[in-house]
Length: 159
Image (tube, rainbow, N blue to C red; front, side, top):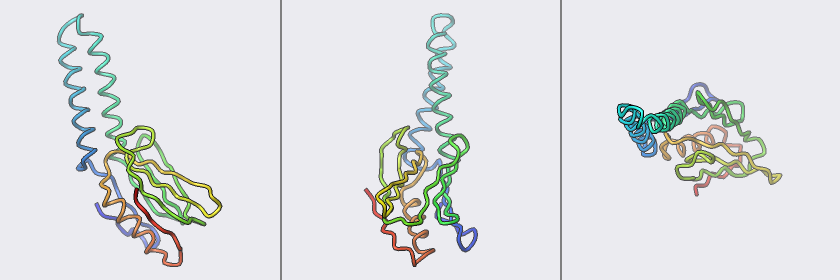
C-alpha cells in the first residue's frame, strides 16, 4: 500500500502479507504447523517432536501476525512504528541530518528493513521493521515525509 495522507501533517504506510519475506514467513508457519500436527498423530513416540514443532509454529505465527499489523506513521515531527505484539517505537526527525533505509535480511533482532535516523549531534535512532514490508512502499513513505516538510534538510539514502 502506498503512503496515505490522513491529515496535512499525518502520513502512514502499512505492512502487507503480500511481500516476498511475508510469504516466506507464512510458508514457514504453515510448514511448522503441519509438522507439529503430523508428529502429534504418532502417539507417544512423536509427543516430544509435536511439542517442539508446536512451539516453533506458535512463534512463526506470532512473528507473522506482528509483521502484518505493523504500520509506520509520521506524526508530530516523528516516525512512529506500531504493531500488535511489539508495541510502539519512534524516532524524532527534529535535528535529523540523514535517514537511511537498510535491508537487514530475515533477522528477528534487526528487523528485515531498518530505518536509521542520524542526527547532527552524531546520535542515532533506529526503527526495525518486520518481514511484511515491500521496500518500495517504505521508500515512497519516506519520500512523502520529506516532501511534507520541504524546509527540513534531510537526506534519504538506501543501503
